[in-house]
Amino acid sequence: MTGEHPFRSWISLEQPRLGTRVVYANDEFFAAKERLIEPAAPVFIADRYDDHGKWMDGWESRRKRGPGHDYCVIRLGVPGRLRGVDIDTSHFTGNYPPEATIDVCASEDEVPESGWVEVLPKTPLEGDSHHWHAIDHEPVVTHVRLNIYPDGGVARLRLFGEVIPEFERPEDVVDLFALQNGGRALAASDEHFGSMHNLNLPGRGVNMGDGWETARRRGPGNDWVLLALGARGTVCRAEIDTAHFKGNYPDTASIEAAVFEPGDAVSHDSERWRPLLPQVKLAMDQQHYFESELVDTGPITHARLSIYPDGGVSRLRLFGTVAEADDAA
Image 1 (cartoon, rainbow, N blue to C red):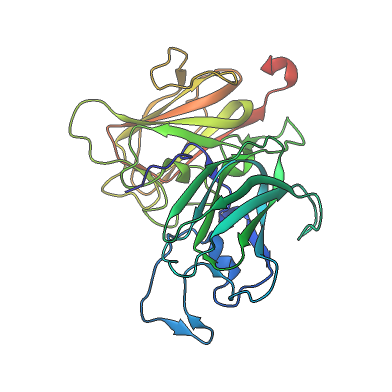
Image 2: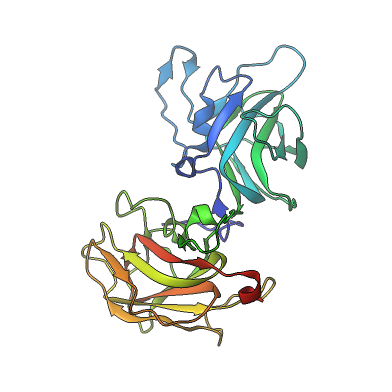
């Protein structure tokens, strides 16, 4: 079951499958820096030790005996705007840092030496806790630096935000909803078994948990998810993939499209929604391709995937061309 958190409408920029990497830590004596962005939730194994001491599921430096502080640098796989963070000290109790800050920069260097801007001032941390903080920083960034004072361990650093893509040739057909192209899920009627943010991840789903799946609907109605495209564009081909969903795939599905300007409220019950893909039959564990079935809507900014009545979808692809400035006006 997916949990609620303050930044659930933003995507997780720290995901390794986006190409994000932990590229440097000044000290990782007790626990490797790479664990800081592991997708899985951190665990505690009581009797597990290694050559350096107690094994911990996170990044942990040794006890500092002199001046200074420890830090770790993360290079994002795709440039983006940072909207929020979670500094997670789960399972770190007597060894968590008392304070932390976060810096960002935009650089082509693997480990930048300059250009850092502080976006989270020194803030207190507690052991075995989540620390959610909104970030107010509009420039696009490529690197994030977590500074801990003076030392200690952090289980996970989650970086929530939006991908800012660069479309070199607007005439090219691209997946307008792909995460790497700036697409993101905004809201869903239900995410009991699987997150809406799995719908536009790279590649096909690895298992049934790597998709969007709702609880069994026992009343009237149907489930839905609202989606923002990475850029205003015209959809010419769609793919609905039910990989790994066999006894729990939706019976049918439809896609609606709309235009919402920046600052507009994107809602399920808006009168702006128009048919893009009329209701179609789905099959289990299969990629479904639609082209001639699509309605010509012109350039759009948002889509709504509706499934009837409930179930699981692994991936959704919305291929199209980015609108020219005149078309987007």
